[in-house]
Length: 348
Image 1: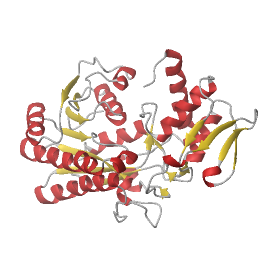
Image 2: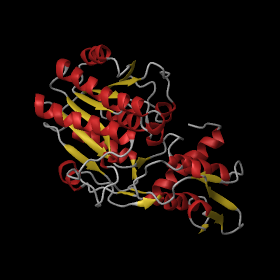
Image 3: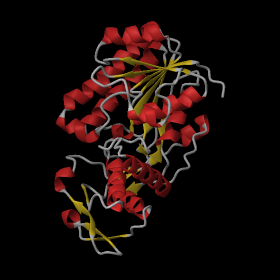
Image 4: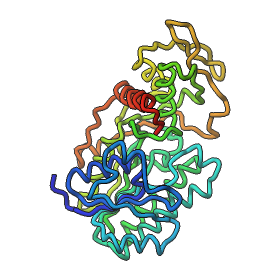
């Protein structure tokens, strides 16, 4: 595929989305510079799993996004034609513990990088990994690019600041700045702190006899679960466009955490039977009668939107976005990856 860009800068290259995106761009012959926090090691298990850690087209640099001169230095040195800003604080739960840190990392960090682009690479296309959390607890579903933004969590607020910055710099300075409003997108490379990966890793270990049961929080939260590689492909296509815009990336189908867990256990031949309500709800293995899931009230968030499901009609029309991996297949792929890691003694 011939892109309008041949040099790309990816912040947070060691994260789930950054690693998948780097792998795709490198396969297309694009030179990639990836950044990681100074406190993070240069090596990364995701880059290793994808086989790109030693790729000749990949360069790694440290970058503190809270340091404006450092942002300018990296952008000036790399002279990117496409900037993919995927770094930041990525966990909603963590934002309740450190709200100011989340706003600094996600909001102010985006502004620093935008300013570096405006001054040192104004012809590049800046693509931001925004989030459906900017919609808070919306009254109507599905959500699209015109849904009102009312952040209800510190994480949502931090992402809303970043998202609004894109619109502001686009309007004020004519930059090609695009926001990908990402609904939940998971993969084999998801961090173990996220509930989907927590589930699939536990399922793998339970099926191998290494654990007995799994503790979860809110089972009723319904989310739009997609497959991350399909989403980062849309990010790459966004940077190919001449002008910036906002795009919702979502499957249009919502499932509860309970449904995801049920699919994950089913992938290893364990059928769950659910009973009880609220904090007393449990899931039993229908074959053995043993408990596999219980509720831990300490895992509930102070604020948790009951339903987030996206309408990606704009992305489908303009970008050809067409997510195909459905919930059961997504859960199966993640469980199989965790089974393989457990066999190799790797955690990821």
